[in-house]
Image: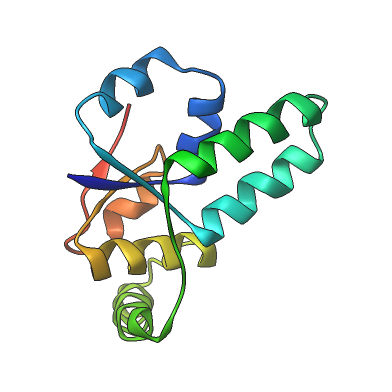
Length: 127
């Protein structure tokens, strides 16, 4: 099954987090969104380990599927944002895009961010 790695999952993977590695053993199609990749890239640019992480991230991106934003995701973004706004439980915009892509493709999101649990029909995998 395909899963989307949230930015905190990408960070944990770069640190070889054993608990996350164990969870990911069961998954055969790892994906990241262009938004999460950009967030991690930003973090790398401001890291004391920039050189090491830049190399790791480049190799990592070659090994996963990158989900881009296109017009197919717009209705999902609209529905999720509207549902969360009506419930008074908004989530950060970048995570809204991740949730929208997850719903579009019927994928789980690997994340420690519990606010994904507010998105109806979205399954979050925690480690």
